[in-house]
Image 1 (cartoon, rainbow over the protein chains, first blue to last red):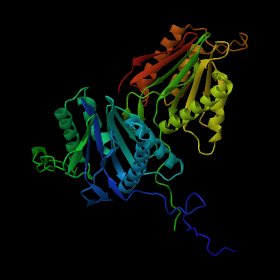
Image 2 (image 1 turned 180 degrees about the vertical axis):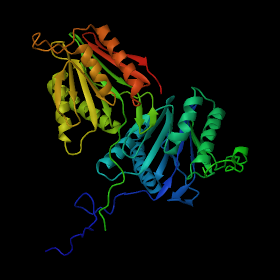
Image 3 (image 1 turned 90 degrees about the vertical axis):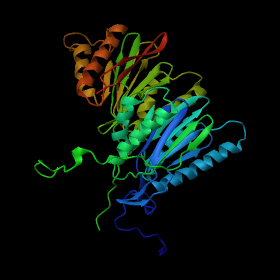
Image 4 (image 1 turned 30 degrees about the vertical axis):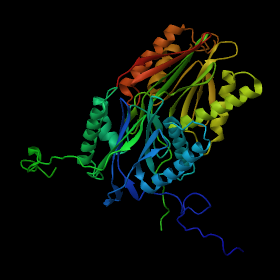
Length: 245
Length: 223
């Protein structure tokens, strides 16, 4: 009789092994990431909030990171899983550099790697609870793709995660066009981020915009958007209305 | 303490419809290019069609991540086959491989609804239709995916051979000529996108015949 056998709690779900290591629900989460292709590369925006349920616990979370020389990764969802993914990618890039053959992983390759990782974790019923945006440019070829926590992936001229899909994509569908200038791209992203700020309760007014071009990646200092709350329609909104809606 | 339920699903339905029609010396395979989740459109330009071998093309709708994984599996197996046999896989051979690959995951299925189309070893068009766990059948035409309930009855009306009691059982292939079959496919998708919210944006049509494989597109409703 093995008294040292690991004891399973009665409420354990699938699997004979201990399930205490699985992600069952996210704890500290980031909200939307929005990105688009422009003339010289990719522009990506994300705010710096890390919510703990309904509390805005962390306000200095960088949810966008450079990967290697050619790619930029933005993540929404569980922050700790994002940090884990960065560790995976660190190792990937390290081994790629160690070949020392003048070649380097481009955004397409990194996106494919991430897709495989996310899908395989989903297969094991232990997903990384993130929606990722991967953008970059290599040898003049721009690339922008996304992967969800269950492995659904695609590339497009503009992508968004979470609430961004509902609020930002329609704006981008209307106003995005080929060869946006840097200023126009930033203006468009700010328009999307402003709508998200007004309507997404987990968004905070402290964002960064990252840019990746052939020259490399730059990320802006955190800044905030101008907002307007004095619309007359919202002054005394219940006047004349039946009920409270 | 009540048993904990998973609050996420490993599956999603990314929608879309696929159609394939076999002819005497050609095969038409078509699918829309919309990828959705829930009531959102993720992208309007996603290809659901994959060339597996020289004369063998597969269109799949359902859960996109599983479809991608399935396509990769088949492509890898095809490569091994080429190394071992020094030739391309024929369409019927690929059909069996697809069935086996799907059944292999019988107890955690690929949520992928496939139609396989191409030319058999004699150059005649063939279409194979599948369910998610690999049961398959050689047919003259087929449709799968979110719009299949709208498309299949129409194809039955246009292509189904009359009762074998009246006429002797004919070949499964349609007597239509290539251009007519392509036209039928365009009509069928235009109709499906009227009523199926997951079908629309664009159709990608792949035609396999003796000269090779060619691709054409047609715009559909974007709503």
